[in-house]
Amino acid sequence: MSRLRSELTLLGAALPTPAIITMANGLTVATLDRPDAPVVSSALCYRAGRRDDGPQHGGTAHFLEHMMFRGAARFGASEIDRLTRGAGGSNNAFTTHDATLYEFAFARDRWHLALELEADRMQSLLLAPEDVDRERQVIEEEIAMYRDDPWDALEEAVFSKLFPRHPYGKPVLGRRQDLQRTDADVLRSFHQTHYRPENAVLVLAGAVGEDAIDRAVAAFDTLPVPAGDRNDSNAAAGRTGRTAFPRETEPQHRADQRLVRRAGEAPRLLIGLRGPAGDDSDQPLVDLLLSVLATGRSSRLQRKLVDGGQLCAFAGAQIAETLDPGAILLSAEVLPGVEPQRVEEEMIAALTKLAQEPPSRAEIRRARRMLIADWIFGHERVHQQAVTTALAMASFDAGHPLRQAERLLAASPEALHQAAQRWLDPAHGTVVGWSLPTDDAETEASEGR
Image (cartoon, rainbow, N blue to C red; front, side, top):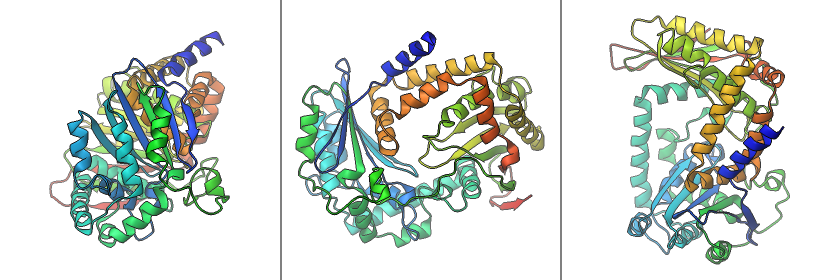
């Protein structure tokens, strides 16, 4: 028990508990004060992602992410990037199926500029039709780039089979025909619906000082207080205006599915299984099991397929942390001259063994040490502390990361075995996707089994 407390202390030091307030207009503001840090990072996370796009306008959340850098009433076109660079800062953003996050990083004496920029575009985004048209072309080029990348295209194909009815099976960027239907009015409606104070979490991390909360309140208090009664189930969960999807507590048995694409110069394998949601108590256990399977040179797949077997250039495994039950993915790139079917059989056999037999205590200790080291290293910078905290608070709560870490550290071999039986048994159904080399320029897709 003392060792567990010691490990949790290390993890807690890497991601401190934030100070949190909720403003009158519903905006949640959290601070992670690190007086020794030379910078301040802000992460503003909206509970709006691909899952919130309309049925005829896939990719709207991502489209709006692009438009948020096109200017608002106070800071017009190109001003956001110009002002950021002029102050020696940086900015970025990303959209997932569950959320959209905007980030800034500035020196400790000028970070308040991030508050001004974010408040302006939350309240009065311009969305000029000519800018919408220009950005649509940029996104179409981005879609083409993903389509031409063998791994990205294979992942999209596998997800479409793994989630035939859930938005997780649809690309975040949308499709070209969706973008053509998405104009300034559609984007404005999405912005007005989802980019509201009560639907957002702002995290400030670094040398924020004692007046950080006061600065945030001053910047955002002109935004309106939400009108009407918000007692519906989504609002009660802090997910204003969101579409709810059925949550599964255990994987259902599904028919195996296969798909084959012809692209690239090397055989690439992606095996997908349905996994637990991000707040499921099994999620960190599956993460640990996948580390036993594929993380580090002494992991099972590395020994069998890469260093020992010399069958693959690499092999990996990962689980997504999503609002609803998500995906478990195993991947491998096959070396020249190796029969792809052999690699697939070895992957399935490794999953089957993990579901049938609990990992050894030595394997668990090794995997746990690697995950702890990754956690601490990954949260050394205040930037990642801000992003992790904002995402956790937007989808779950501020204590979510450390709560899941505690479950991981406390997991017994028996609990891990049970989690493996629930989530990693190929008998529950898999999607096996192959991207195989081709001599022509066409990309084909087929399915069977």
